[in-house]
Image 1 (spheres, helix red, strand yellow):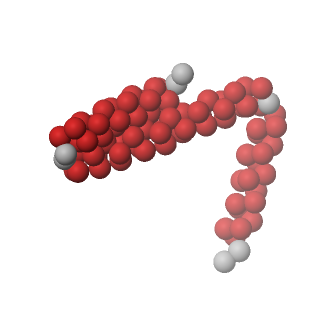
Image 2: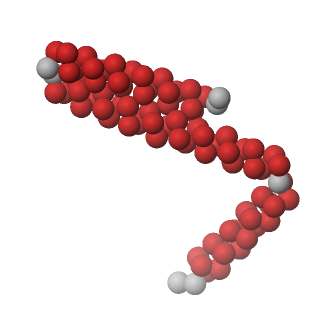
Amino acid sequence: MNSEKAQGVMDKVVGRAQELAGDATGDPRLQAEGAGRYVAGALQEKYGDALTCINDTVKKNPIATVAIIAGVGLLAGLLLRRR
């Protein structure tokens, strides 16, 4: 588990706790903050998953990765050259 995923899981837990505390106290602001933090944590967790997946793919197929990056760079150069 990388640090991004770990931080995302932690934010989800804290967000859910904030949301439940807001429910218990009837504080809509605390509920909204908790819901927002939960969603941000879920996104960060998915970002961590994506980083892990990309890292694994690069390690398994380094030549294909270089070829894809070169192709994207060439395409970007051609598109940016045309105005």
